[in-house]
Every structure is written in structure tokens, then in C-alpha cells.
Length: 321
Image (tube, rainbow, N blue to C red; front, side, top):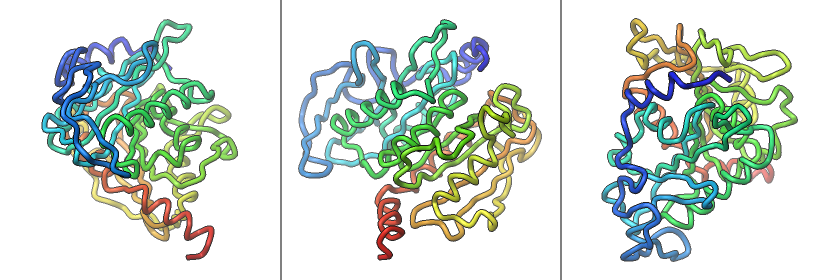
């Protein structure tokens, strides 16, 4: 995938810096903080710090965290992990998505890791191996032990390379991921490569028809396109893919005229708690510059999904009750 040097510059200009510099974040603690007053929240009576560290992971591969400025360790929060595009980094990607601006309003824990630097000198995710799957799974587990996160409401949002990685996580770690948003991504050609996929995951695919980096229709033998991705995950979730619902088009990209994004939802016949969607940006390229509508609408879509209903639906399919 292409070098995103232009993306890095322009996204930082559009999205701005996060709610703090590298040494802190929106919450009451600083990076690497040792914690403070404890609260009794979460499941099983687990005690969480009111002043948690805002960097998790290992020394070699840290990940930054933003929490609400009024973070309460006795309150359970949804978690959103953002996976950046090739050549970008976590902070720039979050700025591009404009997510820093809504952490307080929507009350969620935001995790934004960086991929390893590849042979081309740029950061990118390995969506076909196990190293990044293990790394991201460990981050989710650590986050759930560090912050009062609802394990039934864990979400991914990825762009390009990060979207490929998010879709891979929906296969390898479907028991951890509730729902995800894929912007300009693709996934395995062979559905049998989506393993183990023990639970269905709700997927929202957002893709521009004029994307010349990751083709809207996919590339034969390399990756499948937007329509097939949604069809695959909707089918896995028990949805009737022959009965989509057309939703009103929306304006997400100010540079394109009118309500440029068509929306199709798959919710008929789905397992409890499952639905899938395709948002097609007519005339949209690989790096569409969104209004704040994008951050608000995609997080609204994610946060209404819950893992409890997914697990229940799986049990129903296997046991009949």
C-alpha cells in the first residue's frame, strides 16, 4: 500500500494533536503513572485505579490511551482500538478520524497502538501472520485489567492496512471483538482462512468507489472488496443477505457534493445483536477527509452493539435455546 507521507502531514493538520502530548492524555493520569485512588468497578469486584497509566503494552511496543477527563473507576466503559494505515501511526490516525474530540462526550476508552516498522521503513500491520494478532490481543487483555472496560463492548476501527488487520482480528479473535469499522480495507479471498471465527462479529465497511490504493471491488487472488466483505460477515451472522435495507444517504465528506455516501444495512434474520452495513462513498478516494459526522456516526454504530447478545446468539444456534 502507498506511502502516506502526504496523509501524515495533512491528517495532523486536520485532526490536530490529541488531548495531550506524548506524556499524558485526556484522563487524570500521566503516561506510566503509578495510579492513585482506587474504585471498585467492573466484574468480579475488581479494583481499578482512579489514576491509571496512559501507556500500556511492552517497552518495545507501547500503545497510547485516552480516557475521559472525568474517568470514574467505578463506571464501566466501552473500548475502541484504532489501527492506523500503512505509513501512519496511531496518534495521527486518531486525529484524522477526529476521535480525540469525542472521548469525553461519548465516554469511552481509546487505545491507539503503532504497528512495527517494515522493510520499507514505514509502519504497517501484518494481517496474515500471528505476531500482530498476539500483540493486539494482549493489549486488549491488558486494557481490560487496567481500566474499567466492559469486555462485552470492545471495538476496532481501522484504515487501509489497519482495516485489513481489524478484519483479521474479527477472524482470529472473534471472542474478544464485538464490532468493527473497516475504512478502505480488504480481507482473505478464501473464507476458510477466516479462522477460528467462533462468534459472529458485526462489521461496518466504509469504502470509496474511486479508491486507487485498495480497490472498492477488491483484487482477484489478493483480497475481496467491500460488497463481498459485508456479505461474508452478514452471512456468518445469520443475516438474510437477500433482504438489505436502504438507509438515507449521508454527507460525510465535505469536498464531495451533497449526501455522497450510500448506506445499506443487513439486519433481517440476523442472530441476536448482529447486523452489518456497507457505506459507499461515491467518488471517494483512499483518504477521504471527513466532517465530524464520520466520527459521530461510526462510533454510534459501534457502541450500540454488545458482546452479551452475540454470545447468546451463538449459544442459541448451537443448542436451540
